[in-house]
Image (cartoon, rainbow, N blue to C red; front, side, top):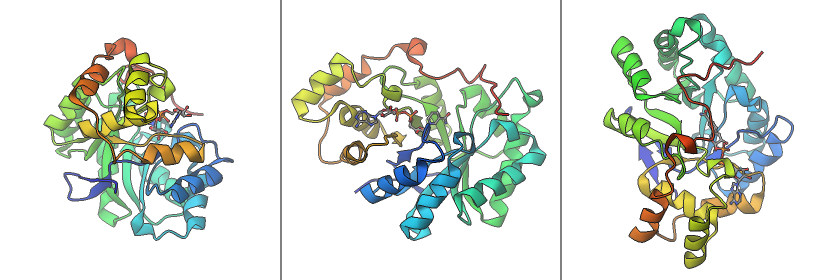
Length: 280
Ligand code: NAD
């Protein structure tokens, strides 16, 4: 059974889900169908992944009752202007073929664009809560100062902060700042986008436990309380990544994985203070 994590607005999110970054529009129906078939009920997508329509196709075809699924999508960095938020969200709903999403995230803070006024974007997102088409709102790639700005300027606290986190870059500062403010942490790139899989320390633990490197890393996330949604296009790996709840790491294993921390050098993605890419 996949544990549910309670969020500050009274809703619950499955701690383990399926990620869809780099799954293209054409492959998404088949890949997401395989993930649903494997047993995933929490899907993480984004307008910028260009695959919401494919995800929606898989959801519709699966016949799974909507309430049994947890669907997250994210605001494109092209649509941060407050006047664009509702139109952008409506398009996501249409593409996903659902009448609500469980969680809508601001994908990046974009402090160097749109006059740095991401709190205004956040206020516009909060207005979407009123008509029930989004159950919860949150943020992604927010540093502590970004969290403080939206909370101070709008009084609205996000339910989650989705941040890069994995053994090479556990992102402890943003993680602790989120948890201190009652914000749950979602770890994107939980396998370091593949970079951590070949680490010799992980291989040693995997051999000791008779598990795969991916399972060892994902179990480390689960035990520290992260919400994770690894991505794979292979059904056997999808199934493997779900099998995390019948073994535990020892304190020695956890200490060894904690020791892989490379600080900022370990990042696989851009720094949120400088990221300002906008799709065409
Ligand atoms: P990830 O850490 O999940 O790694 C994916 C890679 O690991 C793929 O190359 C895959 O082939 C490989 N892999 C997965 N399971 C494996 C297994 N069992 N054995 C061997 N290899 C395996 O990286 P990710 O996809 O970037 O992150 C997960 C999700 O987080 C994304 O799909 C997306 O939904 C989300 N995400 C969000 C942001 C953001 O800015 N908010 C950024 C990146 C990703």
